[in-house]
Length: 253
Ligand code: PEP
Image (cartoon, rainbow, N blue to C red; front, top):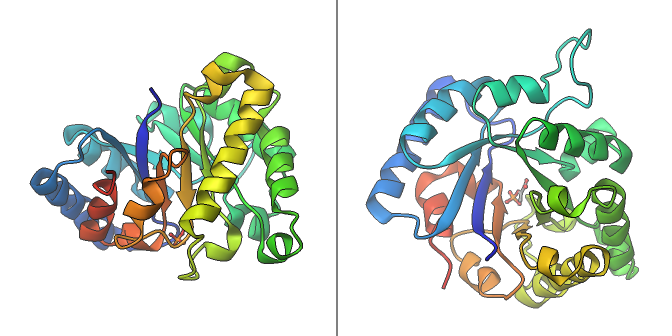
């Protein structure tokens, strides 16, 4: 059985005290409302990972990074390696987010290297893919996602790919308040799963969690998560409010 997962991407938000407060608010909300059988992952900025992972470890949820270096170690000033994250108890890492593709020029080739390093150090990649608006409007969205998924993941064997979480995040929906419709999300998630089935077989594809991301919030999560191929969400803005985030965690029917 694949897992239900809700992950929060805090991006570059919150000063230290606000970040610590938010972590404790999430703990309070989870204590009050529970999380059912949903796996909860919080991805704060790198400088708060240690504080966050200590709090999460004591309270039954997990912490992920938002990025890691494409290099393993050495003279790469300012970079944070997979091995460093792993040594701090970090279990997940978001890779290939559209903001990293757009502002930092990350290509699928670079992201594939990061996927390998994440897995090498025993962590779970949350691999993001998704088309920009012009690509959807010109009906290239399936081709774009096929290329992203195959170039960053299809060098992996069955066992390795089974460790990966995929997040479909249409770029036009990220931070815009415009959400993909439930039908659009299901259509693309089913397409991604069909790619996985073609490459790895049904047994493997049925085990891989595919999350939806893009203006998912406490109001629309239930409808999105009711789809058979939507296994949860990668949440940006709504992850910055503990009550909203935990309401999303509890939006599975
Ligand atoms: C994201 O950045 O991954 C995201 C989904 O953001 P938002 O929920 O704010 O659209």
